[in-house]
Image 1 (tube, rainbow, N blue to C red):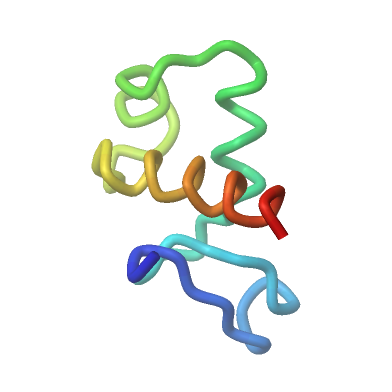
Image 2 (tube, one colour):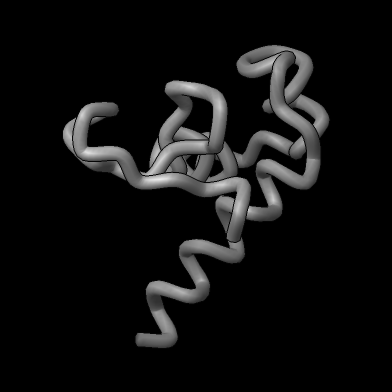
Length: 66
């Protein structure tokens, strides 16, 4: 979970990918729309790595486990 950060000064405290202003919600929305990891990186967020997208999924799963 070191790839996901919550900073109250960034996007009103929404979880973001570390070192970016990209929210976990934005990435999950793209996945829900049917984009592949490769498409998300190529077409939307070229600065991301596959591990960043996987961290977003892991974060969402961890929230559901609470």
